[in-house]
Image (cartoon, rainbow, N blue to C red; front, side, top):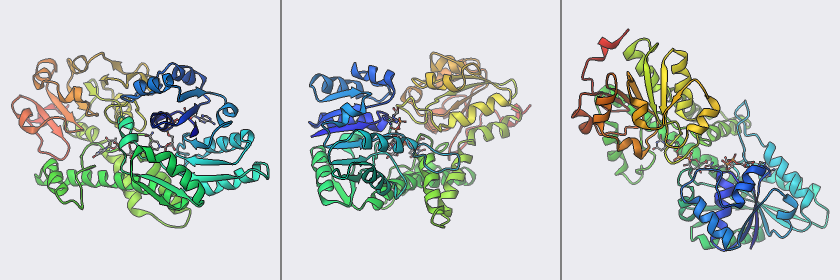
Length: 443
Ligand SMILES: NC(=O)C1=CN([C@@H]2O[C@H](COP(=O)(O)OP(=O)(O)OC[C@H]3O[C@@H](n4cnc5c(N)ncnc54)[C@H](O)[C@@H]3O)[C@@H](O)[C@H]2O)C=CC1
Ligand SMILES: O=C(O)[C@H]1O[C@H](OP(=O)(O)OP(=O)(O)OC[C@H]2O[C@@H](n3ccc(=O)[nH]c3=O)[C@H](O)[C@@H]2O)[C@H](O)[C@@H](O)[C@@H]1O
C-alpha cells in the first residue's frame, strides 16, 4: 500500500518507519526543510532508541522516502496519515491550527478519492469536521473518508511500542475505509479494535487521563505513606498483585510531565466543559500534579529554610528517561524556582541538556557528567530516573558533595543501600533517612 504521513515528530516519523518496516511504501512529509534533509540521510531528528537503524534500513530497501512537497507525497497515496502536533491553547483547549493546514493541503493537492487517517490526538468531533471540510473543498467527483486511528506509543520506547502495542484502535463510519486501515495494520500482528469515530477519539483522551489519574493516585498515597510510616514502593507491589489494579503506572514520584498527559488532561477537561460537564476528578488530578512537581522544592525549603547561596546539583532534565524531551518536565518547574531563590544550579542529563539550553542558556552550569554535577554541592535533586543515575555508587555522593543531602524525586535507590552511608536521603513515599538532623541546616 502507498501511504503518505504528514508530520514527522515522535508519532509521524515512528509511524512512517513502522509502516515501511511491515512492507508499505511510505513517504513522510514535513514543512521543516532541515529535518527533511537529515531524515533523507537516515538521521532521526528526535532521540528515540533504535529509530536511526530502522530508518536507514527502510530507506535503503526503497520503502521509505522524505519530502517537503505535499503534492508529490499525496499523488500515489492510498491513505494519508495526519500526525501533526495538536498543542495546548492558553485556555487548555487543543490547538487545531496544524490539523487545519493539512486539511487545506489535502484539499489542494489530492485529485482522487482518499482515506485520511488521523493519528494526532484531537477532540471528539474533529474527524467529522475534517471530513465535512474536505468534502466541501474537494471537487464534487472526489470523496474523502476519515478514520480516527489514535496513537498510544510512549516516547523513549516508541520503536518497541509501534511493533508491540496492546491494541490498534480504528474509528470509522465507513466499512470500506475501516477495512483499508485494518489491511494496512494487520501485518503488525497487534489486536485491532474497531469502533465509531467519536468513541475512538474519546478512547485516546480517556486512556491518557486514566493513566494520569493512576499516577496522581499513587502519588497521593505516597504523600500519606510519608506521614503514617508506610512505604509506597511496598504498597504499590501489594496493590499490583490484584490483577484488577495492575502493576503498571504505580511508580510514585514528582508527578507526570511530557508533551501529552498535561496537555491531554486539560483538553479533556475542556471537552467536558464544552458540553456543560464539570469533570471534577480530572481537575483534581491536574491540580494535584502541579503541586507534586514542586514537592522536592517545598521539602528543601522546609528543611533548609532559605536556599540562597546554596549549591544545588540537579540530576535529570528530561520528563522521563530515554528521551531528550523536556516538555512539561518537573525540571522546568523546579530549576527556575531554585534560581529565583538565589541558589547556584549545576545540572546534568545524558541527552536533554541541549534542549534545556534553549530555555535557560546561561543561568545553569551544565556539566559533562553526573559526578561533576554533584561535586561541592549542598544538595542534590534527582528529577529523572536515568539508569546512569541509578547505577551511581552512593559513595561518590559522600565523597564529592559538600554535605550529602540527596532528595530523590524518582526513588532511584533502595533505602537499604542508602542506609549503609552517611547520607541524608529524602525520597517519595518512603521513610526519610535523616543522619545529621536536618533542622541544624536551617539558615
Ligand atoms: N509525542 C508522543 O509521544 C505522542 C503524541 N501523540 C499525538 O500525536 C500528535 C503529534 O505529536 P508529536 O509527534 O509529538 O508532534 P511533534 O510536534 O513532535 O511533530 C509534529 C511535526 O509536524 C510538522 N508539521 C506541522 N504542520 C505540518 C504540515 N502542514 N505539513 C507537514 N508537516 C507539518 C512539524 O514540522 C513537526 O515536525 C499530537 O496530536 C500528539 O498529541 C500521540 C501519542 C504519542
Ligand atoms: O499520548 C501520548 O503522547 C502518550 O503519553 C504517554 O506516554 P509518554 O508521555 O511518552 O510517557 P509515559 O511513560 O507515559 O510517562 C509520562 C509521565 O508519567 C510519569 N510516570 C509514569 C509512570 C508511573 O508509574 N509514574 C510516573 O510518574 C513519567 O515519569 C512521565 O513524566 C502514554 O503512556 C502513551 O500511551 C501515550 O501515547
